[in-house]
Amino acid sequence: MQLIIKRLLLLVFIALNLSSSLASAQGKLSAEPPHWWVGMAHEQVELLVYSNDVPYPLGEFNVSLSADRVKIENVITLDNPHYIILNLFIFPDASSQTIEITFSHASGETLSMPYTLSARAPGSADRAGFTAKDVIYLIAPDRFANGDTTNDNNETMLEKVDRNYKGGRHGGDIQGMIDHLDYISQMGFTQVWTMPLLENDMQKYSYHGYSTTDFFEIDPRFGSNALYREFVEIAQSNGIGVIKDVILNHMGSNHPWMKDMPSSDWINHGTTFKGTTHTRESLHDPHSVQADIDEFAKGWFVPTMPDMNQQHPHLAQYLIQYAIWWIEYAGLSGLRVDTYSYSDKQFLSNWTQALIREYPNLTIVGEEWSVNPAITAYWQADSPRYDDYVSSLPSVMDFPLQVALSQALLEEDTWATGIRKIYDTLASDFLYGDPYKLVVFGDNHDMNRIMPQMNNDESLFMMAMKFLLTTRGIPQIFYGTEIGMSDQGDGDHGILRADFPGGWPGDVVNGFTGAELSEREKRIQKQLKFLLNWRKNTPAITDGKLTHYFPKDGIYVYFRHHEQQRIMVVLNKNKSKQSLDLARFKEMLPLEQPSIELVNIENNSRFTISQDLSIPAQSVMIFEVK
Ligand code: CA
Image 1 (spheres, helix red, strand yellow):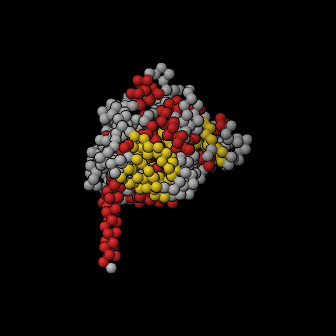
Image 2 (cartoon, rainbow, N blue to C red; image 1 turned 120 degrees about the vertical axis):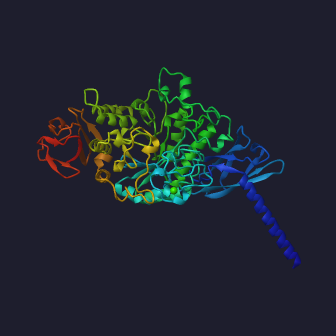
Image 3 (tube, rainbow, N blue to C red; image 1 turned 30 degrees about the vertical axis):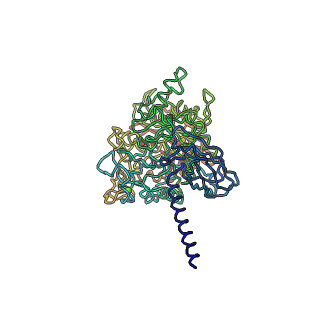
């Protein structure tokens, strides 16, 4: 009996010792991505393994694996001994499992790291991206709604909440977006693009999220990885896809890499700030020199955003896997890529190809802030090019059309200025692989809102919005624009990203419920809600071709048409009512059938095509040809 008790005690002692030594060993090693999946198109995953708590360089350890249908392809050392790269080959028939990776050193030191390979969600590879059937709602999460005041401050994060400071954190979060998904859905939006939500542990301006300090963790002041995934699930059950804002070009200067860099060439210019010239033109300029290209692509965006060197093959692979990880983990419908062309050009080719290979129908839209369509078009897949560059990028942001729209509505009409700016820009669509996949917008989080762009004139504002919702492409609307939110027009980011009314406990004005909104705000919201929901069920807009006529006398006419439906849009910029002779539009209107009518989609008023059309001053009228 005594012997049995002794043996039992010994077993307990061994078990306790084993578990404590394993636990400490596990705590010493970390890997990114933190877990992965079986059954991916890419059969390999490259782990960036890190430890600063081991007395020997990680490269001195012998790495072995206890796993079923998974093998170590190779182990690569970096010039920092705290890191190694571990390539796992996952056989196509491997099952989901947690594998045990063992690191053994000649000294006898042994470390163990579990690593989980999960099963994929059904249909994951074939997920649908966003298309012209969608309208995207762009949200600045810190400024939209504070659904959880308990997370406003986090003791481990540097910046604390300060709603009185325009550049500070105001407390908005993922829960706030979850709480208002019904509003977003009822308004008629079918996609949400959120500004970045990953950890941004910066001293200031952390609210905007573009200074990543952890590529695999949601910032605790926004919520958690699990809550983000829940947000996507609930959004999908409301018919809304979620687009993640991805930054490949830079990270935050407080990212742990800046203190312990995997490799000396991980960041361009090391730890010293050297700014980019922002001259994206140098990439395409036939008279360019390499030094100019390097100054653009390798310079830092700002001093707090070190520029990542995507020419480093393992950083490149890290950024491919980071994007795939979030798509797969959270169930995303697409990505918006920040500062697209600032990353290495060949890397962007490889990155887009890798993502499209994994998700053939995923939509990725690149931000290339150029007003020259020759430059924006260069990055889209299938665009005709002057060189043999390969891009698999499905979409780009249509910055040329954004500025053209603003100029078109504000400038005096002459032969060369005013409304024809829209025409001229759309006439350049031959430059694009697919102009119908471009994301079109009047404003975003980096520029004055469309309302102040239009001098706070409601008529001009509504003309801009109606144009955006009926021209070719995928419309994107900045949160608050649906109630005509304005700003000071000086481009101050903290101001144009103002808090959405009703998003904070105690708000008197409430854009979600309509309480205390002005008559003008209610009118704008009601009109946009109607147009967004009308657009959803209007195949001529979501699937149809665009045909337009050169603007004459301040009037721009275009048609959206496909087999079952024809929509005519008339934009009258004149400050007086106009009468329009329809004879000019005989290619698009069946003028030989005088009983055909133009039905105004907003009020059902009808006009026969045999008579001249009367168009109110400064307005856009939308007709279905019936
Ligand atoms: Ca909060």
